[in-house]
Image 1 (cartoon, rainbow, N blue to C red):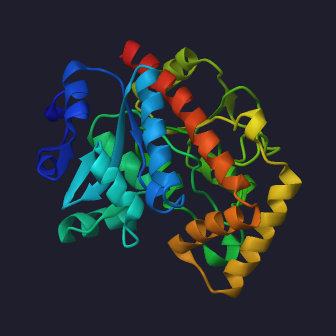
Image 2 (image 1 turned 90 degrees about the horizontal axis):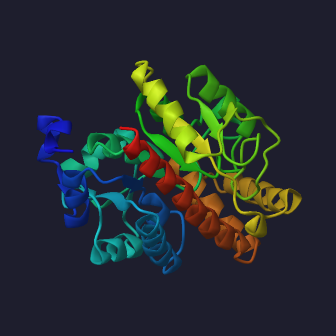
Image 3 (image 1 turned 45 degrees about the vertical axis):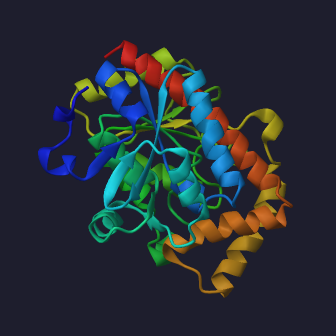
Length: 313
């Protein structure tokens, strides 16, 4: 891979860590990682520690991690230890989606990339696989609030495979899958037929296709993109059994957190960080442990996919 894969106008707005630059030059598989999970998804110091451990898993499994953020007016593809620490400790880090990237870059703000923004930056850098915790989706009550995550539209337009533990269970999962179907985004499941529900393994809703092996997933993606079918794919990888939270237990925490958010007038991009933090408190930290476990598991599956895609390039 060379910088010719990056639009000329964007090259001056991007910076690669030495590790990522070397991997791109050598054609080694890369795995994109988001930074919102560091700045908005977990408390300090678990956020930074988890980020480092996930990067280590990617390296151990045969690829190079590329954690993405906006710092000093540039998209950073690959972060060093000091930059990870900065994100983990910065209360003013912006939560960046598609609409926010130009503002953060042009004004020099610290920005942590969501699923949507990470997909955009990964694609600019020629990275085909992105590992996260759970994707955003259609929020409960969206029929009146119109609150639908930009992640879903990005999946319809940007050719990056997103490996996740399904969608966050604070969402309306049935409507999320309906939206993805309307946009032509395939949902692949790993190890089971049904779509995963973040804290729990089974949402009770069918995924589109079950493809357990990384080689199968890679062939599917290569075929999709060879046909000129735009957009990415969701790879739904359920949380390991030993870290799953009982559905009824987590649902009680979600319902309480949603009610409290509504009473406090919390809306828009502030909703998800609030709910995740509140559910952590209500569960006595159990949800955070589950979140960390599922991200690490996704890193293993996502790295296997990145290696398989590189072999089939």
